[in-house]
Image (cartoon, rainbow, N blue to C red; front, side):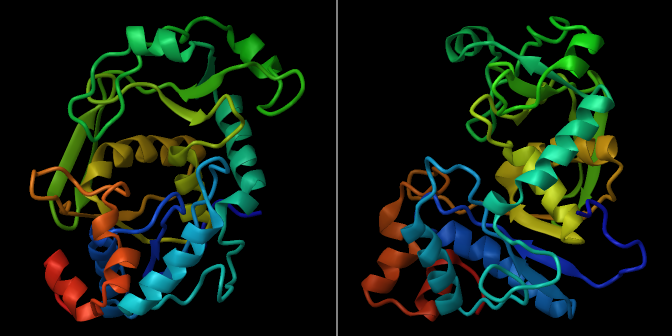
Length: 296
């Protein structure tokens, strides 16, 4: 089980990482096409990773559609669940031990703590998000609730004696986390102001998105992450996790979001603009390129 890529490997390695919780839409198409083009231009490798951690929301029909619709669009990947590769498995549901090992390292380093706040308590106490693209700021209610000794003695998530708690990463309040984005230039966010202590392991025993993608990107030797600009603050969070786990930094390219006629960013609820629906209407990949405002 490897968390860190080989230091001498300079090959460009990008990834597309959809989640099978609904049909992919035009916004996904534009982002994944950009990831494909950047990997192709660099003469590198594109990885397909199925981010299927949430068993309650993920469905097999959506997983099949992801592969079919992206292949129909013309995107080709060199590693993935359907083609194999040296860094599999490429389904997050089969990678829990990687995440658990990272959780142990975070706990040993004093980076995380259990948060027993209920959903109601969180809703009442959390500070409002800066926009509709990010989570509310956690006010730190449980930060000092447990001593370091008690935290180290706590059972691992999912066990019979484990705490009924979310595990949160303690951010360095006041520190500005900066990174260079290949599209946007220098970007930065202040920990504790622009984002707060964030969940790395959910109380229902599901590794959180932030932890899973950091672990997987390192283990799969990803060199550049291409995704939507709604995840800019997530990049700051993930840089903190990379530092805590002593993992190499990666490069970033955040794509402009595609919005509907009302200016709302596309989501999987926009079924009329899903790739599956557009295909059923008889549209071609060229038509999709035109609708999404991207080159073929």
